[in-house]
Image (cartoon, rainbow, N blue to C red):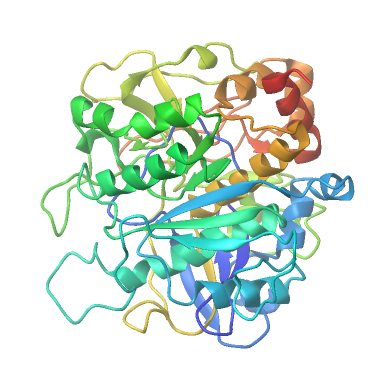
Length: 481
């Protein structure tokens, strides 16, 4: 996803560098941690950094307004479609002790509506809400004492993820309710941690506490047995039955994802891999691109400003992000909705060297974190603005789009995958509703990756949304009106 602003910690905000809103179909995920990458502390000013400050470190930072423009969302706002009356559940480990304040500063800085539940906000009747749900209790998100552990249970490291998820769901659907659902154990490789994640989602589904569920997390698919995974996904089955849309980011490691062993320095899975839950056919997996639009307005292609990749691919509004998860499942067969794809699509259906079954499998469109001032031990992170890269930003933004579509429909769309592919299979609608991303690759190591191509491909999926056109067609495809 493109660079975006977000608030982290105290009375300041953070920036985020991410890949763009590319829609994928299933994707690889680096487990053991949330799907944020390339995060970097920029400054501790009370106002967001200037674009020149972003350019100075080789990145492009988008405000909510620029991001909205880039994906043609404002015409929907003009019609009154803002997600009002709908609720987005954001699933994260541990939570953040400052999120209510962070959200308030973020909303103030960018002129977004305030939510009842933000720090210092006086609630009024009919006002959208921000709430925190701790289904199983939640330990304080404090930094751990020095230890020789793996770092997977460092509560404070999830604080950046929490702020990113909450703030960018709000940035896209500014009048939707947001429910932050926290769990007391981090999701890690395989089944450890995931039962509590799935129990929390099950609680949300059983009580219909949300219309859309956003998960910026995942674990390498091959670290689950088929039986253990099938035992975990019951909440997704129930979400489908209850018309709740489930969205997950594909991860930030390209096709190179971590195995389970050795525990402190796990080996890379020796074949192109994807991550779950994004690989689940009942989940809409979303990946990422580099957005090369003007960072101030979001309205035109800019091939002059950083990052370098935007200067290389002249005339391209988006470039496939190398670390975006994507590829083919080793557990789920190709679903019926993926049998018809836009013209020119590249669908392989297998992963070189992967165990069987490895033919005609579910297709899915994950990055290495870079170091920088911030979450290296502060409580929980340095106060200030951050820029963060990763598919973590894609899931809450797509959740915001679906909340808007639910409002437009007057009911919950629920399981949207068949409808998305039905739209994309119509050449005229595909050209009208999606920005097709045709350049880039997600190979980041000796593990083979996948190139972007016309139509569907295993790094950018169907492409990114032209929201003004896509959402009405999505409503019609799901609900018939």
